[in-house]
Length: 175
Image (cartoon, rainbow, N blue to C red):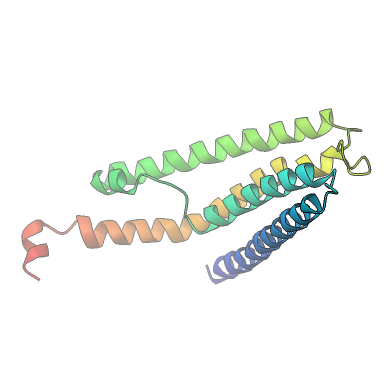
């Protein structure tokens, strides 16, 4: 488990670095584009590059959120379920998430094959395959982050269920 925790920390730092670099880069691109536009010399490539950077930021930020288990969930509903049902619901939820992202990764790969030879309109030297590679890469990375975070989440869920929900009300209030 220590190696999994170490891998999680390394992955978290890597994703944080990528997300921060994308945010800083996107901010700089927008600021430079505004300055050029105010000076009367709009940049032809700004819209496309900013859109690609925002998509990349979204995908890699989602991976970071998956690693930290920070996505929107149904915690209130999960806490209200009986322990056994809750644990089964978590397993079913994980299977659905992995299934969705497996389909997304495969579809993203197919899209990359279809886009072979296409380039950005404003930057013809940049392949659309590079810009769209975030789809399959992000999907696989999301599954990795989700898988790395499962043991910690499972331990937390079981401990929380035992601490907060499996103690009879009389015992809980008498403490």
